[in-house]
Image 1 (cartoon, rainbow, N blue to C red):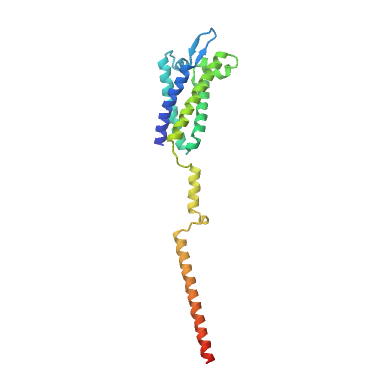
Image 2 (cartoon, rainbow, N blue to C red):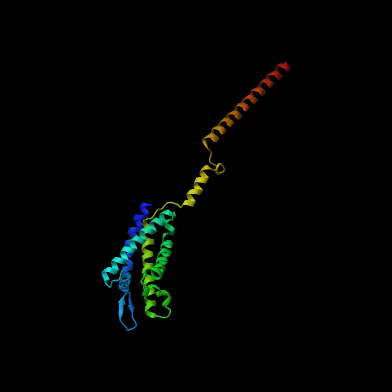
Length: 208
């Protein structure tokens, strides 16, 4: 589980940088026409208006969330082939949690209120793009560095086949039994041949 934790933390750190970069590029146009960088709204979660604080919050949270994904990845026995899918689902799940539970009350219900407010709609879309970018970074990292072993279900199937006598593999005891049976068959064949020879000699003496 340690390797998954380390890969997850590293991937989360990289994904946090990517997500913070996306939020720094995207601007939210307010009702009065002023444009605010979306990353500044992240700093509002800790009651700040600083760009640096927004980056630190984004990267710190992303590292912790990535490490948690690494723990879940290892505990569930996921494969590299499915890492991208589960990382994307994981990113969307945290977008939902973030906007409906973590953000302060003025921004907490942005996706739902975005139907009526264009500014909140832009904010919700910016957050979704950041979370998808974060999920892509997680998925890419675990596809490259994640555990390549088969899942638990395949391991159980292989274990069952190893102990199942119907799969054609013979245990040492069964091999010994087969060898003993073959020896008895060979002995019976030799005895039968000797018996036929004695009968033939008897018939020859009778003819004389």
